[in-house]
Every structure is written in C-alpha cells, then in structure tokens.
Length: 159
Image (tube, rainbow, N blue to C red; front, side, top):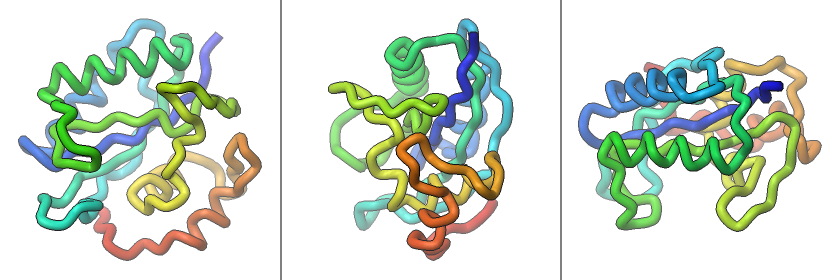
C-alpha cells in the first residue's frame, strides 16, 4: 500500500536549484517510492537576515515507507548533499520536510505532521496549492484556501 506524501524542499547554498533537482532525483530513487508531481520552484527570503535567498518547491511522493523510515531516508539525502545542522533556520545546502503524510496527524518526538509551521510559510503553501485540488483540506481540518488567505504571497518569486 502506498501513501501520498508532500515534501517541502529548500536550499540557499551551493547552487540551490541544482540541489533541489538532485534531491528530487534521489527521492524518486528511494525504495518503494515514486516521485509523482513537483511544483514550480520559488525564490523566497530567508527567515534570518543576511542569508542568501532560498529556492523552494513541494514534491508529491507515493511511498510505501512508514513515516519515520521516510524521514530517515530524507535526512540521509540531506546529509549526502552536504547538509550540516549548525544553526536553526541557518543557511543550508538542502532541507527536506515532510509536510503531509497521507491524511494522518502525527505527533512524534522527531516528526510532527502536518508540518508545524507550514501555515505561516508562503514558500510551502503556494507550491503545495499547485499540487492539490482547490478544496483541499489538511488532515487536521484546516482548509488550504483559508491558510493561503492568511499568508500573503509577498516575498515569493515564482521561478
């Protein structure tokens, strides 16, 4: 059985668009996983001042991996592409976040789904909106349309 999973991608170091393309290829190669769709790439400002702009996207995966093995696989891709975890919200070669895992709500020490900050992140919501129907609701009952209305497109640039 496979589950539709949405993964947020971000990079602001070492050729960010190429980092995202490499990550998409690596995710498509994960055991029991198929890359189904990818949003456009977006440029966004960093959450911390003085950092390079990020390149972001959202990917839809169909996977037979359970949530934590998928998280481990995504973190392995990050590490393989030079990710170093030094500073929260610091610059990075690659960031892969599980945004949604099917219609499940998960609250584990290592993984919270829906992703705990996605409602405030235009660089997540707008790419996600490209991949789901207009009436899409998150597993916790929030509608994507309502979240988009509360999170302006400001600061984003569709690439």
